[in-house]
Image (cartoon, rainbow, N blue to C red; front, side):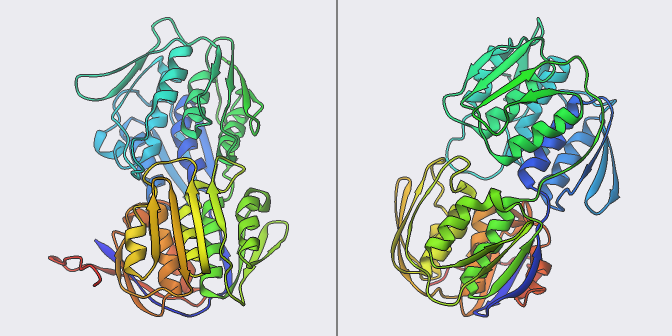
Length: 430
């Protein structure tokens, strides 16, 4: 076990390079199961979710070869379905993409329930609805595995999602891409990683159109072939470093980004009184004065991402005045608030609404990451707080943030990662 120690209270200056998008990377890796050929995937982030995804595929018979730090060759020619190890599947939420990929390739799937961050009951009912419309039969096996089978093959159809679920949209795409006929997904998710996955599959010979709109059309093809593909930059990693620049009162050029993907985040930062300058593939985020209190509602893309709920809450704790965040997607998104309260934050949570009384400061103490984005928010808070903060359970952070300690060191942070001694017990702040 390891922890991060930060001596905060200093502004950060310099440049930060953003890696490949986590949410695309895991979908593309799982989706590569559809392709009985070699694919070369570039700009993959060096994070534990990617490592777990590769471990799952290799356990199923895939060959994975690292070409350089961010580029891998995946060969799924001999991969077999239904044998993914439950202990690996339960480490991440995106492992449920194996359902759509296995169903699309083998006409049957068997996968243990996924793990990942807990935000209440994250049902897969919309995934199941899509599989059943395509001709699949879904059940939970005696061993607790999710199982689906299409005894007569998958057939294209019209599917209307009850909500624009990213996971369901991607899983239905994976199942439908080789189905007979044409599939329409209505009320589809519009997030950039849905588009990114679709472009990857099209480069492999799929026929997907309408991505980026709420109606996606998939004309089934008989076979897919390998390709080389480069993952888009991670908009949530970029948004997190934007929050870090603002929280510390510094100025960071955040490189390798697509500014359009950050528009909803940028708009809220400007409303907070934070300067954001946009360039072709970078943004400069700076703060000199106070942070304004604002009201935020997280929504499906192109709204403010739910993954920015926690980092933005840190900024509102540092603001002067009362703000609110309304979570428009998940229940139980505010478990991180207990940790921020230990740092002196004044937050009241009522269902999906958090009311924040900004005090302009946070206090250094000992805290624990409770999920991926909560961990990033605690790093942001610790960098802003004067004194030493210790962050436990940092494996959550490493699921989605590549080399965060060294990236922050390069822009002036006093931060280090150390081993936790055996027998160490977490001590709550007074």
